[in-house]
Amino acid sequence: MTQYAIIVAGGSGSRMQSAVPKQFLLLDGKPILQHTLEQFRAYSPDLHLILVLPARDLDTWATLCDQYGFDAPIQTVVGGTTRFQSVRNGLAVIGAPTGLVAVHDGVRPYVSTRIIQNGFETAAREGSAVTCVPAKDSVRLVGDDGRSEAIDRSRVRLVQTPQTFRLDWFRQAFAGDEQPFFTDCASVLEHAGFPITLIDGDYANIKITTPDDLR
Image 1: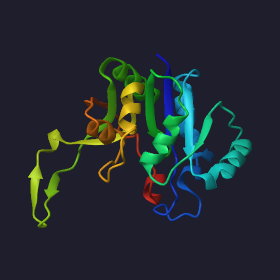
Image 2: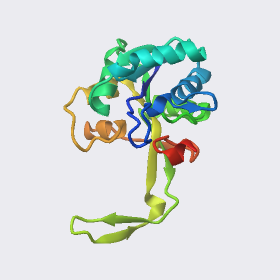
Image 3: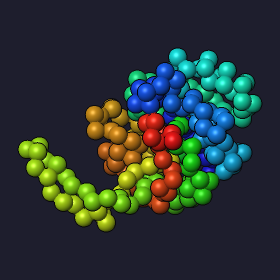
């Protein structure tokens, strides 16, 4: 089954307190986004990689690729104003009716090839594979009235990426209208009526968003 990966990299750097978009900040001598893409390329050289970037960042990324010698075959797509729209733009360039598609945050450079592989293998069997880790801290649910109640943390999972799905399910779900409660691809697929299967992630698979994350 043909495998695709949509890498979404639309950050602005505001929470990073940086004028440079966070995906372009250097980590161990090269851009964060390059590390991320190299992990997916290491998983399989046959993987179809689609990179979604804001139009304003296309020239910057091309310059960085030249500067740091990154020339892997990747299809670049202009993103939308929201994550949902950006993912849908990435999906639009996939012409095949069937296959598997993973969506991953461009600023999660520590994703392992083991997680990527498990995502594709699980999605091939179950239709979906959403990476997550158990909550370490105690968790409380806050109501509209400001009151809170304890939740059994053994039942709570913190969702990461990649999130991998059957392409036909994915296409059907993203054909619908965007909703304000869509926070990730899993919520889009669930809203469309498709079951969500969870797989083990890794606490090291962090999303680099703030200066503390970068350190």
